[in-house]
Picture 1: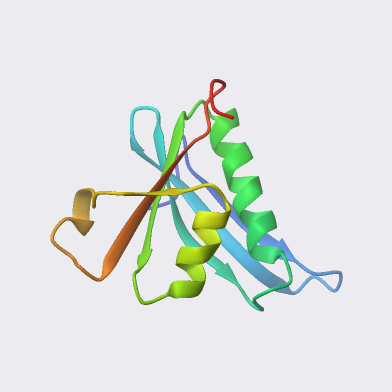
Picture 2: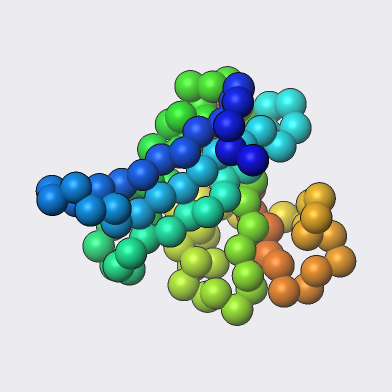
Length: 114
């Protein structure tokens, strides 16, 4: 699911080498990547922000112009995190169409984005 061209998996480790966060990037459609499996072992320490920034930089280096992602609407911490990171809510896409528990986001990352 995460292998191949245009995909990446990032694992964040602490000073002792323990995994403390991760995230994946996969092609969704031409010019658009999807972030999957974002996770931080402990909230509020900046790990999620570092992982997200690294995935955005990787997506940009791979030539993507936009990133999309989905999270559960009841996960208000994640919803707030993505909104603060500059993502905007979009209509459901792909497998999330017709799933009211899902909330989808997008963020432009191309050279013309701010």
